[in-house]
Image (cartoon, rainbow, N blue to C red; front, side, top):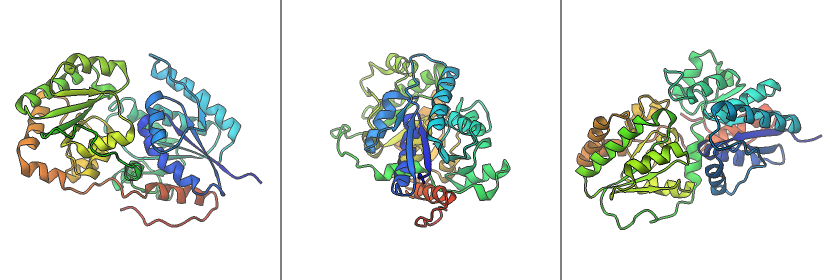
Length: 376
């Protein structure tokens, strides 16, 4: 009798990083199940970088990305590709992570073929269907189609409970991004070791920040650096030309700014460890940086990761240049304010989320595997 099959789907760098530990945890039990990793290629180069950091490659690469395609085109190409894989492999479970178009499409393709779908990092919510766009819609619709939910925190679990998800199909696990972070071998002294002043890590790529909001972020950065002449800002630029062109025009000639291509994941982790503080609109970075005691200023009006704000490790500052400048300089000039954010425990995970997911999924297939203490 053939072994059951679990198809894990990823498409972008962030969801690949968070899916990799789940795939590795399942493959520890390859005598029980076949685990197939499918990449849509929604983020081409950055996805391959992320897999390589874990010594992995996709079993199936759909390669859907073409220059300038719309969300509708990404969706239609992804669902055709994933559906073909499901038809061929006939899996017992489909698993995907987070809130990407790839994840939404994977849940829909599984639903059409009546295959149970497991949602890693389930239950994250904001109060606006269009913010972040299209991620909030992606995760809400994915939630409707999900057979087993893996919320990373108790707050995410409570969101699902309010939406009517029964506790028996919702298991709080911690965030698999912390699993990925803790298993990385991080290179040392690669980010400007000679620089003695503050080092600011700045990432901004979200669709809702394109255009004027990003100009505001750039203006704030110029103000901060003018007030802190010994500071240096490192800005990894997303591959999207809309993001790169604006950053290059606004910051490319600034003597205290270093615009860099997206680092490989271990190098980015090293940058988080090296920096003084983080300004970001990234969800994953909001989760990762507290593990290194780095204060985070969130360049968004709302966040689906409020645990960091509640715990005091992050603060919402939006994209208003005056607010960003004020809050950043407060941390750089007030040691007490900086220490209060830097010394708070991360609320996002303990590095065992993937093992909890593995135990539940294999248990649903009738296999007993080692227990893992609950995440609280």
